[in-house]
Image (cartoon, rainbow, N blue to C red; front, side, top):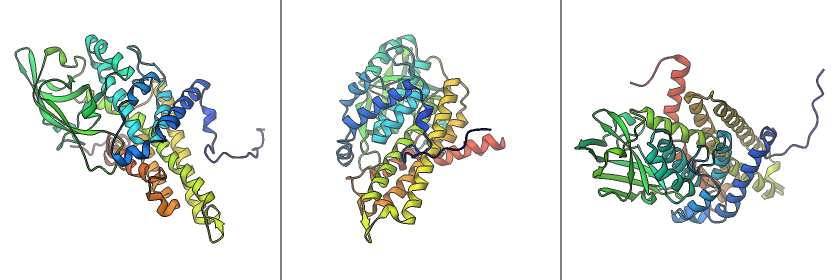
Length: 394
């Protein structure tokens, strides 16, 4: 007979004791990133959000911690497990989705395609600099008229002798105007190809998107390629077709499904602390039944989301994770985190719309996370095809 269920003093921030599912090394890495976020992100991130700026100088500090391309091997990369990468994303997004996006784009969208599909010359030139934070990368896939349907992109690369000439426009590009190198995807006569484009190349320009009310502590840009001439060896030699950019997006989505848990946790913690301290009708609002229900639903959603993230992380490390399972995690964990943020905002009342608390910042950020790297609708259809065997796409 098994031992009886034991009474315990529960931790409201780790109700299911998921911390016990981590190894000592995983906890050490997580705690290291958590301290970095507490020391270098949380004191100033509300100001960055309000001003619409991101401090590029953080890149070298992040590089020194090994956060860029941390799950890649060689070329100055840390070579951590996928689960450790995910846990780092959780802590970074606890700080701000823009901070996690900066790391995700650098490692999963800019470094990964060079590492996976680039020539040895590409790797030697760019990856050590990018891992150290000495060079910043961006990922040029989305266009003004080609978001969820990247195959309809209009950016085109044509041969001119041994050179390539690129023309087109990319939109909603994180890190675009601060990048030293862009991985740009373009139509060619032989299919979609990726190109490694130094941003100081003649004809390349980047203009920041202003007026954002989400991901304000993040640089978002439009890229314009006007007769950008590149040598023959600028093309990524090891991939042709949408497999290239889509595999990069799966790398980023994996970080997002962990990261969203961090954003949700920040909102839940703020709401729980506030509910205990805020008094109405002579009692803390934490004693009211409706408030307790909100807090419980937040806690349950986040504990479930963390279990999903850890399970998918273990599968990734075992080599058994599918793209459709990544879609499951991105779809549901972001959805749960957004609902947590909205519920937390209601617990804080009017205080919930100020930057004195992290909730409205995370809530606005998560609206973008809900959409980018595959919209909620696209991931729903990916899962629909997986369970029915019938594609809803053309």
